[in-house]
Image (cartoon, rainbow, N blue to C red; front, side):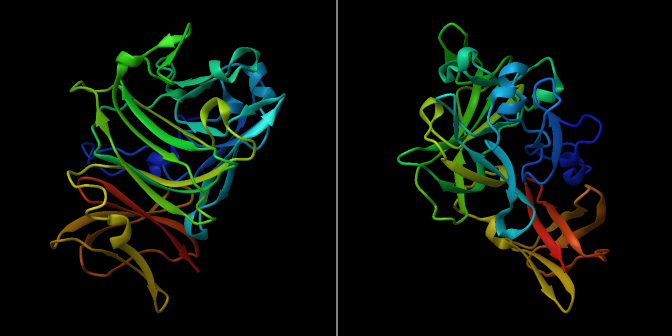
Length: 326
């Protein structure tokens, strides 16, 4: 769910150039908040700007959702946070671990085939306006399926009302509203290792979208297996004309220590200058400076120990790294 007055994701990562292509809010799942389950008094923890089954649109059914389908866990590299999704059977049906930047519609009579997620265009807490056309979607995950279960990460751009699935007989048919789509299915165990995924966007036509709607699940829709689990971290929308595998900024952007000092190094095919911000865990910007590619640049004004986030604006995309100053 969104924090209207303090969007930590945007506060931590925004640059002055409003024309810079945007990212999903809180894409590294670093910022969490306590929210009410249904009408309360029970509470749960969710990433800021994201929601799960326990904050669905039916308060009574939200309270029946089992604990543990969406939880906080250690992030990639052992620092910061990631989101953990797990399928848990309750009352004889699978509660598929899931997360969305929209909102879950709780099915009546606990029938999972009637459940879906949607963009609530009337409430900014449950939508993300978006009109860009990214090239691809990338991120990191660990997967531990039960049996032959499979999960997914899916993003659609749409105009008007949007939902996933696009069609549920008797409920909605929003197939015509979809403008573009990217989907990645995780199907096999990663044996406890973080694995990078990358998938291109495909466009239905040339329309501009109004919103982007994202969902990730631990299992296969309505037939998810009990205890299938996925961890997700560092999601990014890529804006360039290169294949996602031709030039890997994630590999070529490094942070390292030398004599109690922190350096960042951004490799590029030519000499370029980028804007960089360092923010702390509260979202406060502690340093702003320019970074020259292919040259190690010392991070300024990073005096206190703790976790920070280094974010570089290349002009076509944002690249983020976690920094742990010891």
